[in-house]
Amino acid sequence: MARAGKVKEVLTRGLGDRKTIGLGTALVAIGGLGKLALPGFANIETVLVASIVAGSVLGRWWTVIVPLGAILLQQLVAWGSLYPDNAFEVMAGITFFVATGYLFVGVAGRKLKPRMVARVGSVALLTTLSVPLTVAYDLWTDVGEWYFIARPVGVDFWTVLQLQVPFTAYHILSSLIFVPLFGSVFLWAQAYLSHRHPAEAPASDPHAPHVGG
Image 1 (cartoon, one colour):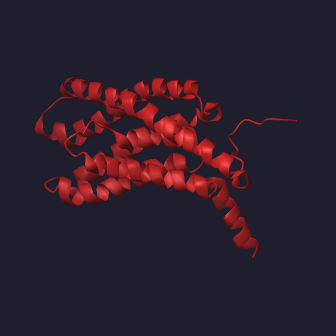
Image 2: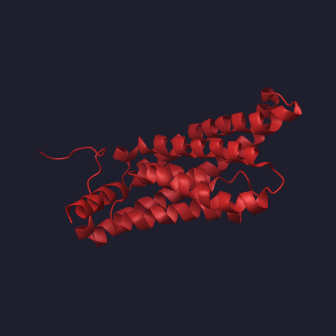
Image 3: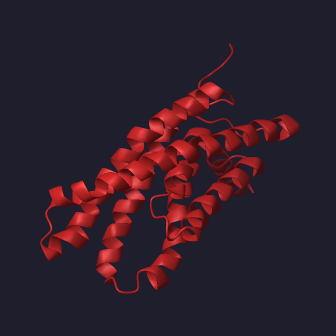
């Protein structure tokens, strides 16, 4: 019984209460299914946005669960149907760069967690951060694309970067639209649910700032 209680305590500390788990699961679904629902719009990055929001709004284990869960959900379909002609090692390599890029975005968003409350300034801060994070994500995934796809056919990295410019512009535009939208919705939902059910307040976050004596 003591071991079961300790496991429950660890899970509660890492995942939060039922409300937080519900919001985290929703972010996984929005990130993964949103990407799959827009195959013709590769530069609308729902996973990247979900990763930023997960780190900055939910924190805890969701900083890692949301990006990895969303990319797993996406790749379960992508590997079998969207990219049937790519070799396994190419898909595995690209997936590594994409997944680590999303993780970086989530962890960077996590640094804002103590400053995120349900107010306009928080959303503006998150939106501002999304721009350099989007550029950094694109640069990192460009390295993977060059190494696994472009390099074998003789295309140099500089050419890959030049070709990426318009796509990064669309990525930034996507982030400027969806980060404040998702961020506002999830900040409001978190505040609303906490107000409605104060008895279910989540376990203390070890990284949250201490308030009081």
